[in-house]
Amino acid sequence: MRAYVKNHSLGLEVPYRYGSETRRYLPDFIVLVDDGHGDDDLLHLIVEIKGYWREDAKEKKSTMDTYWVPGVNHLGTHGRWAFAEFTEVYQIEADFEKKVEAEFNKMIESIVLSGVPAAMHR
Image 1 (cartoon, rainbow, N blue to C red):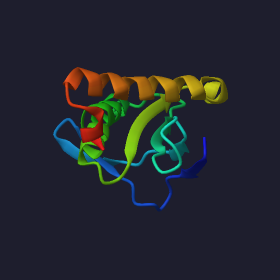
Image 2: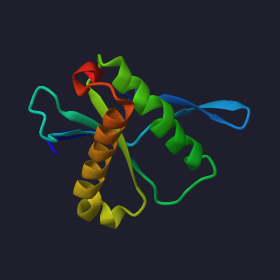
Image 3: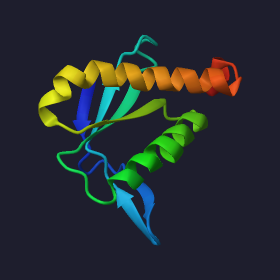
Image 4: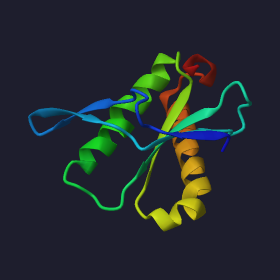
């Protein structure tokens, strides 16, 4: 981990649907992670900390995994992004490296499965 910031007054809001209503999701933190791509290509990891699941938590996670992260990564002008959710605060430190690695592996797998050379995803 290189740096992190609480997403307070940064303007990072993600629109999502809950039923027929459009809402805005404000993730908790943005973490810059050195995942082996070098200082000029750090991973931006959006971290959500959930002490409990409200009814709309599933829609927020689905929006991040299905639309927002793939969309911003495909755009390619804002660096590389991933999303991780921690459900138990006391396990964050122990799970952090595993979560980062899992998100990174998911991204690599999606690139390989898409059949598009990785260089075209930048």
